[in-house]
Length: 394
Image: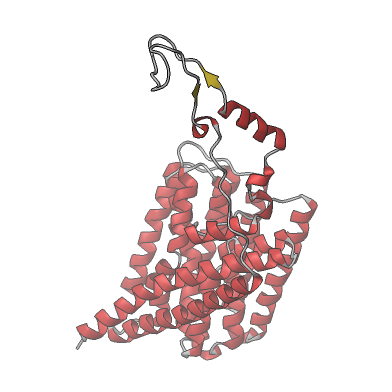
């Protein structure tokens, strides 16, 4: 019999874990970029490791592995890669008006996504015979991807991925603190400007007959010099920004973000696993549906905002970067540390076909050009996929 107290507790823990996951990911990514910038690390490398990188997904996978839930981790990887295309990319198309054309960099990133997806599907199809070697292959592919893309961006062949992280007030403050060149102060004004302001502030304006001014010691209707208050002519004082934060501060924030990521990953994986046991559901199915939908919510919000503003490159970079990260580094870690027998038993042909098909459709849409009805069609297919998972593979 289902324990409703247990269900309510795990559902609440799941929601709380999502907020903690987002907080940790923001802190980790933002302060990693700031520290790297302070230490003189290449901006290209920073862009590759922060824009589209699914560090929160990696935290969930590591937490699932630590609890012996390899099937849940696999389901999350497969489900998130499908959700990024059919669920997030589709929303970006829906909220964009008119026909959409994509640039050269978007097409290159999309082609790479299809290539890595095919490699991942083939490895998973023959995982029983390959074993843990597959993990090493995927991690090596991720390293090669970062190095090669970084090289071509440096050479100017491609554009760096757009940053897809959510903006927050704290992030803006950190950026302001680090932009030393933009800091304004009163000393920036030239001496001549100050003299002009001072002379203007002391300008004498004679009173007209319509505006008589009487002084106790002067005759009636005698014109008396009138000095305009200085504040009426002087320019407002410029805003003085705070000095930049110390490197130690950003290191502490980075550690806090990492701890929040680790804790949220444990909470999410444990709560979902408990719900799966309560309702007697497969860990793979729950990972492909509930967990993957929740962990890809930021990508969906980013796609909506970018699509509505006509920033099609961000929509593609968001999807392509996330899937490449998932299907190389995250999958490589899973195959290296996961339960091989459990992974082999949980692989379903239907999931592999949907993963490969969604990447193929993604590539075709970007190369040919997109319209709003295509986004609607992709979203309908995503709902159909979720329904099929619960109906036939629970």
